[in-house]
Image 1: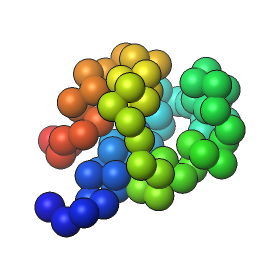
Image 2: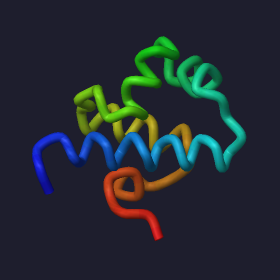
Image 3: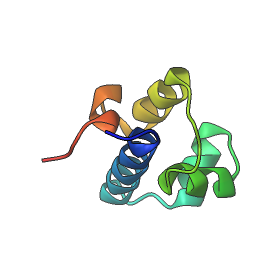
Length: 73
């Protein structure tokens, strides 16, 4: 995996889980206390998240943090 690939994987997975739950970027951003443009940057793999941030996002989506960081089946 190249540098930055994990950010893209997390972003794709985040978007997929968010859509499965019928949440808009804006709604999830509000629930997390961040701006919707920041959420868009995460989904595009442009933001370097801390592990705490990944855990917080996973909790809001009701998934395990590792599910955000690995390949989806």
